[in-house]
Amino acid sequence: MNILQAILPIFLLILIGFVLRRAEFPSAGFWPQAERLTYYALFPALLIDKLTSMHVGEQPVLLMAATLAASICLLAGMLLVVRPWLQSDGPAFTSIFQGAIRPNTYVGLSAAGGLFGDAGLSLSAVALMTIIPLVNVLCVLVLARHGRDTTTHGVRGTVTQLGRNPLILSCAAGFALQAAGITLPATVREGLHIMGSASLPLGLLAVGAGLSFSAALAGWKDMGSSALFKLLALPLLAFAVGRTLGLGGTPLGICLIFTAVPVSVSSYILARVLGGDHERMAAIITVQTLAALVTLPLVLGMLI
Image 1: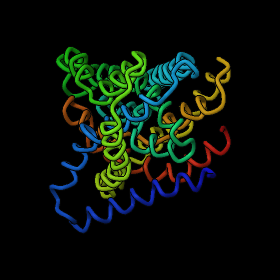
Image 2: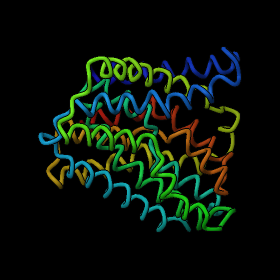
Image 3: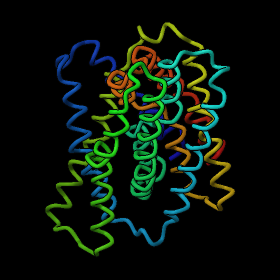
């Protein structure tokens, strides 16, 4: 399957989700609950299903983790250095920062599965185990320093939040089962497979339902800079770091996918709770999701 064939269905589902939400079908309250179901149940089932069938010893897990961690930290440092030139206030900067480093896992997993099949989905768990803790810690620290609410409750609570994160817990469970050589009963495996198969289409529909085009009509400078960092600079950094470390093939492709996808919708919630500019965050999410329709196949086509 070529890159466009793998990517276009993702954005088609996002568009369908947006149309359904605008039509209030099935109801306005359905989509937040659908996202919760996907995040807390269906998505973890997918990760456990793929991880328990993955041969970890055959994969460059440490090189993948090092590539992702180094590229994200390098970009985070660059953002802090260039902040005076961005001419944005503290809360607006936190939105640019989140938009530059936090990936949409639904889009990433869908692209990984479309391009690399089950191997891509299994290696995606390695990427998520690296990205989720690191990105959450960095974003909470920046929000605590530059957001409207500069108290430290967000920083103190981040360890607890990470310990309860269903994606981290499911990745840890999958790795533990595989490392222990435990084979799940066929009935359980089939149940996980069925649940996991529902996670990505429902998750992508929920992404589309969360887009706000009205929010995307203002603040183009901040949205443009955040999109430039996230959709172009970060995957280029990941490519450079990965090649320097000797990473290639599917593992490098997975690193590029998760650095080239648009920002996660969950960044809006974090901005609202911890004193960021949540309205600007909503605009950044929408603009990046639309821009990624062009940049994602372009970047992956050039680098993979």
